[in-house]
Image 1 (cartoon, helix red, strand yellow):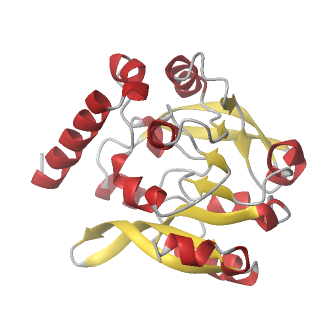
Image 2 (cartoon, rainbow, N blue to C red; image 1 turned 180 degrees about the horizontal axis):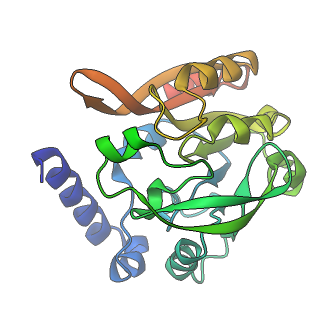
Length: 252
């Protein structure tokens, strides 16, 4: 184990111990994604839309720092959705929808990775397995896909939503299916790849161009994965300047 991974695990453990809202999750083996803490602390939002929730790590990080912001999460894999529901049982401000988001309403096959958080609606590529061992496909599930645009009851009352997307190569499809919802978002925080890790995925440049055309500006790149001196993937924070997002995201 690298020193960086060991340090991150220690940070997650300490955060879980020090924050009461993480105690139930700790007992279930779910830890907050503390690597996103700095980004979240510099963003003011009135709703978290958590696309690709896995077992609730990102939502847990948000909840441990904000007890009142509404959270609506999306996770199509049944086993991970069950963990999420166990973590947030009794939290009336957190809701889970057990389906995926995309560009159109349909049923698709999700490719289950040995590491569940590397699962995707796209086939897992050889480069993904080479760079990230133990992420090969171990099964599939048929899941429902809907569009964010069709869920206006979630985002319609928000003016400063924070849209987080972590869907292993399917990011652009989620955005295209939520173009109307983007108008109610102050921030978009998305994991993107610089190289193709999943078959047919959009790369970071395509995602950035789409968001730029939608009125968003890149504010920060963080949590970089670098292999042999080359950037493989990272988390990208975008803000809508006309909604005051850029100023707040920069912490100014």
